[in-house]
Amino acid sequence: MTNARRGRIGTRTGVFGTLCGLVFLVNFGRVVYAPLLEPFRTTFGASAGAVGLLATLVWIGSAAPRFPTGYLLTKYPRHRIVLASGLVLAASSAVAAAAPTLRALYVATVLVGVGSGVYYVSAHPLIGQLYPSRVGRAIGIHGTASQIAAVVAPGIVAVVLAVAIWPVAPWRVVFLLLAAVALGSSVLFWLAAKRTDLEASTPLDLELRAAFRSQWRLILTGIAVIGLAGMVWIGVFNFYVTYLIETKGFGGGRSRTVLTVVFAAGVPAFWFGGRLADRLSFVPLLLAVLGTYVASLLALVVVEGFAAVLIVSAVLGFVIHCLFPVTDTYLLTSLPERYRGSGYAVFSGTMMPIQAVGSVLVGGLVDAGFGYDRVFVGLALAVAALTACLAVLAAVGRLPAGTNG
Image 1 (cartoon, rainbow, N blue to C red):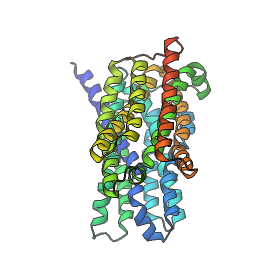
Image 2: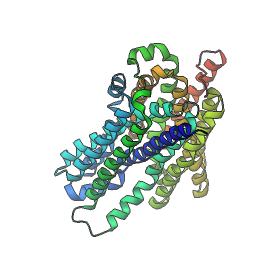
Image 3: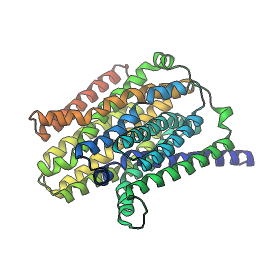
Image 4: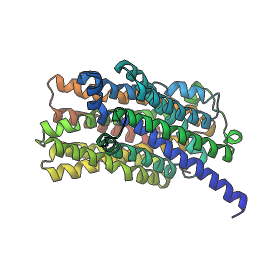
Protein backbone atom coordinates (compact mmCIF):
# COMPACT_ATOMS: atom_id res chain seq x y z
CA MET A 1 0.00 0.00 0.00
CA THR A 2 1.45 3.36 -0.99
CA ASN A 3 2.05 6.09 1.57
CA ALA A 4 -0.51 8.32 -0.18
CA ARG A 5 -3.13 5.57 -0.08
CA ARG A 6 -2.34 4.82 3.56
CA GLY A 7 -2.63 8.54 4.36
CA ARG A 8 -6.07 8.82 2.73
CA ILE A 9 -7.34 5.82 4.68
CA GLY A 10 -5.91 7.19 7.91
CA THR A 11 -7.51 10.60 7.55
CA ARG A 12 -10.83 9.06 6.48
CA THR A 13 -10.73 6.86 9.57
CA GLY A 14 -10.02 9.95 11.66
CA VAL A 15 -13.11 11.70 10.32
CA PHE A 16 -15.24 8.63 10.95
CA GLY A 17 -13.87 8.24 14.47
CA THR A 18 -14.80 11.81 15.34
CA LEU A 19 -18.26 11.24 13.85
CA CYS A 20 -18.73 8.26 16.18
CA GLY A 21 -17.78 10.50 19.09
CA LEU A 22 -20.19 13.20 17.98
CA VAL A 23 -23.11 10.81 17.48
CA PHE A 24 -22.60 9.46 20.99
CA LEU A 25 -22.90 13.01 22.35
CA VAL A 26 -25.82 13.91 20.08
CA ASN A 27 -27.86 10.92 21.19
CA PHE A 28 -26.78 11.38 24.80
CA GLY A 29 -28.24 14.89 24.61
CA ARG A 30 -31.58 13.45 23.47
CA VAL A 31 -31.89 10.64 26.03
CA VAL A 32 -30.38 12.33 29.09
CA TYR A 33 -33.61 14.15 29.95
CA ALA A 34 -35.47 11.06 31.16
CA PRO A 35 -33.19 10.32 34.15
CA LEU A 36 -33.03 14.05 35.00
CA LEU A 37 -36.76 14.73 35.26
CA GLU A 38 -36.87 14.35 39.03
CA PRO A 39 -33.92 16.74 39.64
CA PHE A 40 -35.66 19.24 37.33
CA ARG A 41 -38.81 18.99 39.48
CA THR A 42 -36.77 19.65 42.62
CA THR A 43 -34.97 22.67 41.16
CA PHE A 44 -37.94 24.38 39.58
CA GLY A 45 -40.75 23.15 41.84
CA ALA A 46 -42.67 22.08 38.75
CA SER A 47 -45.26 19.38 38.16
CA ALA A 48 -44.50 16.03 36.57
CA GLY A 49 -46.29 17.14 33.40
CA ALA A 50 -44.29 20.37 33.21
CA VAL A 51 -40.92 18.64 33.37
CA GLY A 52 -42.15 15.72 31.29
CA LEU A 53 -42.63 18.16 28.44
CA LEU A 54 -38.84 18.46 28.27
CA ALA A 55 -38.52 14.85 27.06
CA THR A 56 -41.03 15.64 24.30
CA LEU A 57 -39.45 18.94 23.29
CA VAL A 58 -36.02 17.44 22.65
CA TRP A 59 -37.56 15.04 20.09
CA ILE A 60 -39.65 17.81 18.54
CA GLY A 61 -36.44 19.80 18.20
CA SER A 62 -34.78 16.81 16.56
CA ALA A 63 -37.56 16.50 13.98
CA ALA A 64 -37.90 20.22 13.18
CA PRO A 65 -34.66 20.91 11.23
CA ARG A 66 -34.68 17.87 8.95
CA PHE A 67 -36.04 19.62 5.84
CA PRO A 68 -34.16 22.91 6.45
CA THR A 69 -30.96 20.89 6.80
CA GLY A 70 -31.69 19.24 3.47
CA TYR A 71 -31.90 22.71 1.93
CA LEU A 72 -28.61 23.73 3.56
CA LEU A 73 -26.97 20.65 2.03
CA THR A 74 -27.77 22.10 -1.39
CA LYS A 75 -25.70 25.16 -0.46
CA TYR A 76 -22.90 23.98 1.82
CA PRO A 77 -20.70 20.85 2.07
CA ARG A 78 -21.86 18.14 4.45
CA HIS A 79 -18.92 18.37 6.84
CA ARG A 80 -19.62 22.05 7.47
CA ILE A 81 -23.20 21.25 8.47
CA VAL A 82 -21.94 18.46 10.75
CA LEU A 83 -19.58 20.97 12.40
CA ALA A 84 -22.45 23.40 12.87
CA SER A 85 -24.54 20.68 14.55
CA GLY A 86 -21.77 19.99 17.05
CA LEU A 87 -21.43 23.68 17.86
CA VAL A 88 -25.22 24.00 18.29
CA LEU A 89 -25.16 21.04 20.69
CA ALA A 90 -22.32 22.59 22.69
CA ALA A 91 -23.94 26.04 22.88
CA SER A 92 -27.44 24.78 23.69
CA SER A 93 -26.08 22.46 26.40
CA ALA A 94 -24.29 25.41 27.98
CA VAL A 95 -27.53 27.41 27.86
CA ALA A 96 -29.38 24.50 29.47
CA ALA A 97 -26.80 24.33 32.26
CA ALA A 98 -27.32 28.02 33.03
CA ALA A 99 -31.13 28.07 32.59
CA PRO A 100 -32.61 30.19 35.41
CA THR A 101 -36.21 29.09 34.77
CA LEU A 102 -38.04 26.08 33.40
CA ARG A 103 -39.13 28.13 30.40
CA ALA A 104 -35.50 28.92 29.58
CA LEU A 105 -34.72 25.21 29.88
CA TYR A 106 -37.55 24.51 27.42
CA VAL A 107 -35.86 26.73 24.83
CA ALA A 108 -32.45 25.18 25.42
CA THR A 109 -33.96 21.69 25.16
CA VAL A 110 -35.47 22.40 21.77
CA LEU A 111 -32.07 23.64 20.59
CA VAL A 112 -30.37 20.49 21.88
CA GLY A 113 -32.84 18.54 19.75
CA VAL A 114 -32.19 20.81 16.78
CA GLY A 115 -28.49 20.04 16.99
CA SER A 116 -29.22 16.31 16.84
CA GLY A 117 -31.60 16.66 13.89
CA VAL A 118 -29.07 18.67 11.89
CA TYR A 119 -26.39 16.13 12.71
CA TYR A 120 -28.22 13.01 11.55
CA VAL A 121 -29.33 14.50 8.22
CA SER A 122 -25.82 15.70 7.35
CA ALA A 123 -23.68 12.96 8.91
CA HIS A 124 -25.32 9.91 7.33
CA PRO A 125 -24.74 11.09 3.74
CA LEU A 126 -21.18 12.03 4.73
CA ILE A 127 -20.61 8.47 5.96
CA GLY A 128 -21.91 7.20 2.64
CA GLN A 129 -19.34 9.44 0.93
CA LEU A 130 -16.49 8.23 3.15
CA TYR A 131 -17.24 4.52 2.66
CA PRO A 132 -19.20 4.12 -0.60
CA SER A 133 -18.50 0.37 -0.83
CA ARG A 134 -19.07 -0.38 2.89
CA VAL A 135 -21.98 1.86 3.82
CA GLY A 136 -23.73 -0.77 5.94
CA ARG A 137 -20.67 -1.55 8.05
CA ALA A 138 -19.96 2.14 8.64
CA ILE A 139 -23.59 3.00 9.42
CA GLY A 140 -23.73 0.02 11.78
CA ILE A 141 -20.65 1.09 13.74
CA HIS A 142 -21.90 4.68 13.83
CA GLY A 143 -25.31 3.51 15.08
CA THR A 144 -23.66 1.35 17.71
CA ALA A 145 -21.90 4.43 19.12
CA SER A 146 -25.26 6.20 19.22
CA GLN A 147 -27.00 3.29 20.96
CA ILE A 148 -24.27 3.01 23.59
CA ALA A 149 -25.22 6.53 24.66
CA ALA A 150 -28.80 5.41 25.29
CA VAL A 151 -27.57 2.52 27.45
CA VAL A 152 -24.99 4.40 29.54
CA ALA A 153 -26.79 7.75 29.96
CA PRO A 154 -28.74 6.72 33.11
CA GLY A 155 -25.55 5.40 34.71
CA ILE A 156 -23.55 8.53 33.93
CA VAL A 157 -26.33 10.69 35.35
CA ALA A 158 -26.50 8.51 38.47
CA VAL A 159 -22.76 8.93 39.08
CA VAL A 160 -22.90 12.71 38.68
CA LEU A 161 -25.92 12.96 40.97
CA ALA A 162 -24.23 10.79 43.60
CA VAL A 163 -21.12 12.97 43.83
CA ALA A 164 -21.58 15.79 46.36
CA ILE A 165 -18.68 18.04 45.36
CA TRP A 166 -20.38 20.22 42.75
CA PRO A 167 -20.80 23.95 43.42
CA VAL A 168 -24.04 23.94 41.39
CA ALA A 169 -26.96 21.53 40.98
CA PRO A 170 -25.63 18.19 39.64
CA TRP A 171 -27.98 18.23 36.64
CA ARG A 172 -26.32 21.48 35.55
CA VAL A 173 -22.95 19.72 35.74
CA VAL A 174 -24.25 17.07 33.32
CA PHE A 175 -25.02 19.74 30.73
CA LEU A 176 -21.75 21.60 31.36
CA LEU A 177 -19.81 18.40 30.73
CA LEU A 178 -21.85 17.74 27.59
CA ALA A 179 -21.16 21.25 26.34
CA ALA A 180 -17.41 20.99 26.94
CA VAL A 181 -17.03 17.55 25.36
CA ALA A 182 -19.24 18.50 22.39
CA LEU A 183 -17.10 21.57 21.73
CA GLY A 184 -13.89 19.55 21.92
CA SER A 185 -15.29 16.83 19.66
CA SER A 186 -16.40 19.42 17.12
CA VAL A 187 -12.91 20.87 16.98
CA LEU A 188 -11.40 17.40 16.51
CA PHE A 189 -13.88 16.64 13.74
CA TRP A 190 -13.02 19.88 11.93
CA LEU A 191 -9.30 19.18 12.14
CA ALA A 192 -9.80 15.65 10.80
CA ALA A 193 -12.07 16.93 8.00
CA LYS A 194 -9.47 19.51 6.93
CA ARG A 195 -6.79 16.82 6.73
CA THR A 196 -9.06 14.70 4.52
CA ASP A 197 -9.78 17.61 2.19
CA LEU A 198 -13.54 17.05 2.21
CA GLU A 199 -14.07 20.57 0.89
CA ALA A 200 -12.83 19.53 -2.53
CA SER A 201 -14.39 16.08 -2.60
CA THR A 202 -17.92 16.87 -1.38
CA PRO A 203 -20.38 17.59 -4.20
CA LEU A 204 -23.34 19.79 -3.35
CA ASP A 205 -26.70 18.05 -3.57
CA LEU A 206 -29.40 19.25 -5.88
CA GLU A 207 -32.63 20.66 -4.53
CA LEU A 208 -35.07 18.60 -2.50
CA ARG A 209 -37.75 18.53 -5.19
CA ALA A 210 -35.32 17.23 -7.78
CA ALA A 211 -34.18 14.48 -5.42
CA PHE A 212 -37.75 13.40 -4.70
CA ARG A 213 -38.86 13.51 -8.34
CA SER A 214 -35.91 11.36 -9.32
CA GLN A 215 -35.96 8.89 -6.43
CA TRP A 216 -39.54 8.98 -5.12
CA ARG A 217 -40.12 5.21 -5.11
CA LEU A 218 -37.00 4.57 -3.06
CA ILE A 219 -37.66 7.45 -0.65
CA LEU A 220 -41.31 6.50 -0.10
CA THR A 221 -40.31 2.90 0.59
CA GLY A 222 -37.92 4.07 3.30
CA ILE A 223 -40.55 6.39 4.77
CA ALA A 224 -43.16 3.62 4.84
CA VAL A 225 -40.81 1.16 6.57
CA ILE A 226 -39.21 3.40 9.17
CA GLY A 227 -42.21 5.72 9.56
CA LEU A 228 -44.67 3.01 10.58
CA ALA A 229 -42.27 0.61 12.30
CA GLY A 230 -40.61 3.49 14.13
CA MET A 231 -43.96 4.98 15.17
CA VAL A 232 -44.98 1.63 16.64
CA TRP A 233 -41.64 1.26 18.41
CA ILE A 234 -41.71 4.72 19.99
CA GLY A 235 -45.24 4.09 21.21
CA VAL A 236 -44.28 0.71 22.65
CA PHE A 237 -41.02 1.57 24.40
CA ASN A 238 -42.34 4.77 26.00
CA PHE A 239 -45.03 2.69 27.73
CA TYR A 240 -42.90 -0.42 28.21
CA VAL A 241 -42.39 -0.07 31.96
CA THR A 242 -46.04 0.83 32.54
CA TYR A 243 -47.14 -2.09 30.36
CA LEU A 244 -45.01 -4.59 32.28
CA ILE A 245 -46.26 -3.29 35.62
CA GLU A 246 -49.96 -3.13 34.74
CA THR A 247 -50.27 -6.10 32.37
CA LYS A 248 -47.51 -8.54 33.32
CA GLY A 249 -47.58 -7.77 37.04
CA PHE A 250 -43.87 -6.97 37.34
CA GLY A 251 -42.46 -4.60 39.93
CA GLY A 252 -40.92 -1.29 38.94
CA GLY A 253 -37.34 -2.52 39.34
CA ARG A 254 -37.86 -5.60 37.16
CA SER A 255 -39.71 -3.58 34.56
CA ARG A 256 -36.88 -1.06 34.27
CA THR A 257 -34.39 -3.92 34.02
CA VAL A 258 -36.30 -5.35 31.06
CA LEU A 259 -36.32 -1.94 29.34
CA THR A 260 -32.56 -1.66 29.88
CA VAL A 261 -32.12 -5.04 28.20
CA VAL A 262 -34.23 -3.84 25.26
CA PHE A 263 -31.87 -0.92 24.65
CA ALA A 264 -28.72 -2.91 25.40
CA ALA A 265 -29.75 -5.40 22.71
CA GLY A 266 -29.63 -2.51 20.25
CA VAL A 267 -25.86 -2.09 20.70
CA PRO A 268 -24.82 -5.24 18.78
CA ALA A 269 -27.91 -4.95 16.58
CA PHE A 270 -26.67 -1.81 14.82
CA TRP A 271 -23.35 -3.43 13.98
CA PHE A 272 -24.92 -6.73 12.92
CA GLY A 273 -27.67 -5.06 10.86
CA GLY A 274 -25.15 -2.91 9.02
CA ARG A 275 -23.00 -5.91 8.15
CA LEU A 276 -26.02 -7.84 6.87
CA ALA A 277 -27.06 -4.85 4.73
CA ASP A 278 -23.68 -4.91 2.99
CA ARG A 279 -23.93 -8.60 2.18
CA LEU A 280 -27.58 -9.44 1.48
CA SER A 281 -30.22 -8.18 -0.94
CA PHE A 282 -32.04 -5.25 0.60
CA VAL A 283 -35.69 -6.09 0.00
CA PRO A 284 -35.66 -9.70 1.30
CA LEU A 285 -33.64 -8.49 4.29
CA LEU A 286 -36.10 -5.67 5.06
CA LEU A 287 -39.05 -8.05 4.78
CA ALA A 288 -37.36 -10.59 7.06
CA VAL A 289 -36.56 -7.98 9.71
CA LEU A 290 -40.09 -6.55 9.59
CA GLY A 291 -41.61 -10.03 9.85
CA THR A 292 -39.46 -10.89 12.87
CA TYR A 293 -40.38 -7.56 14.44
CA VAL A 294 -44.08 -8.39 14.10
CA ALA A 295 -43.57 -11.88 15.51
CA SER A 296 -41.60 -10.66 18.53
CA LEU A 297 -44.15 -7.94 19.32
CA LEU A 298 -46.98 -10.51 19.21
CA ALA A 299 -44.90 -12.86 21.34
CA LEU A 300 -44.50 -10.14 23.96
CA VAL A 301 -48.27 -10.08 24.39
CA VAL A 302 -48.51 -13.86 24.69
CA VAL A 303 -45.62 -14.84 26.98
CA GLU A 304 -45.77 -14.77 30.77
CA GLY A 305 -43.09 -14.86 33.43
CA PHE A 306 -40.02 -12.72 33.90
CA ALA A 307 -37.54 -14.96 32.05
CA ALA A 308 -39.79 -15.36 29.00
CA VAL A 309 -40.57 -11.65 28.81
CA LEU A 310 -36.87 -10.82 29.19
CA ILE A 311 -35.90 -13.10 26.29
CA VAL A 312 -38.67 -11.82 24.00
CA SER A 313 -37.81 -8.22 24.91
CA ALA A 314 -34.16 -8.81 24.03
CA VAL A 315 -35.19 -10.22 20.64
CA LEU A 316 -37.59 -7.33 20.08
CA GLY A 317 -34.91 -4.75 20.93
CA PHE A 318 -32.36 -6.48 18.72
CA VAL A 319 -34.68 -6.74 15.70
CA ILE A 320 -36.02 -3.18 15.74
CA HIS A 321 -32.53 -1.75 16.11
CA CYS A 322 -31.37 -3.89 13.17
CA LEU A 323 -34.04 -2.25 11.04
CA PHE A 324 -32.55 1.23 11.34
CA PRO A 325 -29.07 0.57 9.82
CA VAL A 326 -30.58 -1.73 7.19
CA THR A 327 -32.97 0.99 6.00
CA ASP A 328 -30.32 3.71 6.16
CA THR A 329 -27.93 1.56 4.13
CA TYR A 330 -30.68 0.75 1.62
CA LEU A 331 -31.25 4.46 1.01
CA LEU A 332 -27.70 5.78 1.21
CA THR A 333 -26.25 3.06 -1.01
CA SER A 334 -29.05 3.26 -3.59
CA LEU A 335 -29.38 7.05 -3.84
CA PRO A 336 -27.10 8.55 -6.50
CA GLU A 337 -24.34 10.68 -5.03
CA ARG A 338 -25.87 13.88 -6.42
CA TYR A 339 -29.09 13.21 -4.47
CA ARG A 340 -27.67 11.49 -1.39
CA GLY A 341 -27.90 14.42 1.02
CA SER A 342 -31.12 15.99 -0.20
CA GLY A 343 -32.85 12.64 -0.80
CA TYR A 344 -31.95 11.44 2.68
CA ALA A 345 -33.22 14.73 4.10
CA VAL A 346 -36.61 14.20 2.43
CA PHE A 347 -36.76 10.71 3.92
CA SER A 348 -35.62 11.82 7.37
CA GLY A 349 -37.78 14.94 7.49
CA THR A 350 -40.91 12.97 6.60
CA MET A 351 -40.48 9.86 8.71
CA MET A 352 -39.59 11.70 11.94
CA PRO A 353 -43.00 13.41 12.40
CA ILE A 354 -44.70 10.09 11.64
CA GLN A 355 -42.64 8.36 14.31
CA ALA A 356 -43.22 11.13 16.83
CA VAL A 357 -46.97 10.43 17.12
CA GLY A 358 -46.36 6.90 18.42
CA SER A 359 -46.57 7.80 22.10
CA VAL A 360 -49.64 9.96 21.58
CA LEU A 361 -51.33 7.17 19.61
CA VAL A 362 -50.69 4.48 22.21
CA GLY A 363 -51.58 6.77 25.11
CA GLY A 364 -54.77 7.92 23.39
CA LEU A 365 -55.92 4.38 22.64
CA VAL A 366 -55.26 3.29 26.21
CA ASP A 367 -57.13 6.33 27.54
CA ALA A 368 -60.03 5.39 25.23
CA GLY A 369 -60.36 2.08 27.03
CA PHE A 370 -58.28 -0.29 24.92
CA GLY A 371 -55.92 -2.50 26.91
CA TYR A 372 -52.21 -2.50 26.18
CA ASP A 373 -52.34 -6.02 24.77
CA ARG A 374 -55.04 -5.06 22.27
CA VAL A 375 -53.16 -1.91 21.29
CA PHE A 376 -49.87 -3.77 20.79
CA VAL A 377 -51.55 -6.51 18.76
CA GLY A 378 -53.25 -3.90 16.57
CA LEU A 379 -49.96 -2.10 15.97
CA ALA A 380 -48.22 -5.39 15.18
CA LEU A 381 -50.93 -6.23 12.64
CA ALA A 382 -50.50 -2.81 11.02
CA VAL A 383 -46.78 -3.53 10.51
CA ALA A 384 -47.72 -7.00 9.24
CA ALA A 385 -50.05 -5.41 6.67
CA LEU A 386 -47.25 -3.08 5.55
CA THR A 387 -44.88 -6.05 5.25
CA ALA A 388 -47.42 -7.94 3.12
CA CYS A 389 -47.93 -4.92 0.84
CA LEU A 390 -44.17 -4.54 0.37
CA ALA A 391 -43.86 -8.25 -0.41
CA VAL A 392 -46.56 -8.00 -3.08
CA LEU A 393 -44.92 -4.92 -4.60
CA ALA A 394 -41.57 -6.71 -4.61
CA ALA A 395 -43.11 -9.77 -6.27
CA VAL A 396 -44.53 -7.69 -9.14
CA GLY A 397 -41.31 -5.70 -9.55
CA ARG A 398 -42.65 -2.36 -8.28
CA LEU A 399 -40.46 -2.06 -5.20
CA PRO A 400 -36.98 -0.55 -5.68
CA ALA A 401 -34.44 -3.32 -5.14
CA GLY A 402 -31.61 -0.96 -4.26
CA THR A 403 -27.95 -1.53 -5.03
CA ASN A 404 -25.36 -3.03 -2.68
CA GLY A 405 -21.81 -1.67 -2.73
